[in-house]
Length: 113
Length: 114
Image (tube, rainbow over all chains, first blue to last red; front, side, top):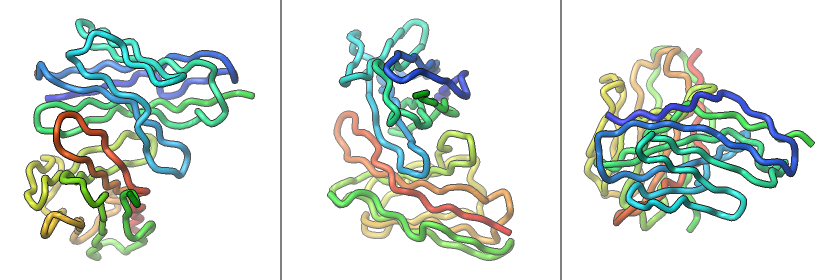
């Protein structure tokens, strides 16, 4: 069975600073994908970044990057140069085998002006 | 690409009534997913389809819940004899097949059972 754990219910960051959101996962599959999704208040969920488990190189998308530690089953999201528009719920998710996505409980990110 | 659309956006119903939600996925997407999200929680998997075939259904889903995707296009999620515990946001998402494919979410249907 897949599980995804986000241990930080809420995080705050000063505008223009850097913040890291944590995620750990567990899966028995050897081939899987990991994702971070963003859900702004009252708006639909959108993909931020994804990582294939077979790739050692950490994914990067502009100000967003991940630290993928396969042995530790850790998948953290780093947001650099935080902006007010980054304020949202962030969900870590895994996908493997049956194409089912499993989500964590989320981290609410507050960006302070 | 008009995105995933869900109808209605909000539904208020009395306990014991049946409700049905509709989801129209992105037209070229083969896979369609239903998730349930309660306040402060992540989306919880309910079921998913590949084309018209329902490939997996959560064990958490009681017999009061049923989903269909006739002809592999839009999907409906029906909840019979609603209970207050069914109050949640019901999210639909779709994706294409082949390799990895991200989920594209709709805006959700918020159900309130009184």
